[in-house]
Length: 76
Ligand SMILES: [Zn+2]
Image 1 (cartoon, protein in one colour):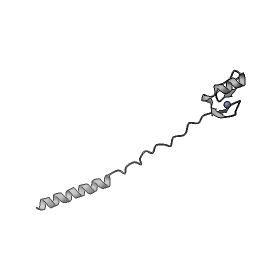
Image 2 (image 1 turned 45 degrees about the vertical axis):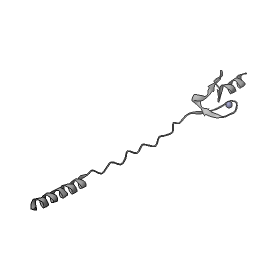
Image 3 (image 1 turned 60 degrees about the vertical axis):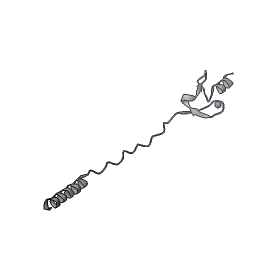
Image 4 (image 1 turned 30 degrees about the vertical axis):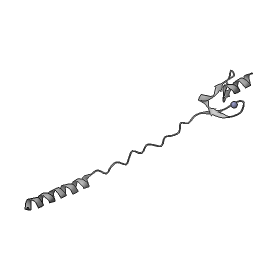
């Protein structure tokens, strides 16, 4: 019975020791807030609507349009 008590104390001691040694969990790797992709916005030569340069329609003279329709309207 004495050994059971000693064993119990040893286990409790180990349990407490492990509890204290536990490395604090690293702060959850917070996903860096995604920077919105900045896009170069250009204004349509006809209606002045701003559209991303990648989506703009480029006219013969290099003017940019919001749509092929406005490019045709401007270039005849
Ligand atoms: Zn337009």
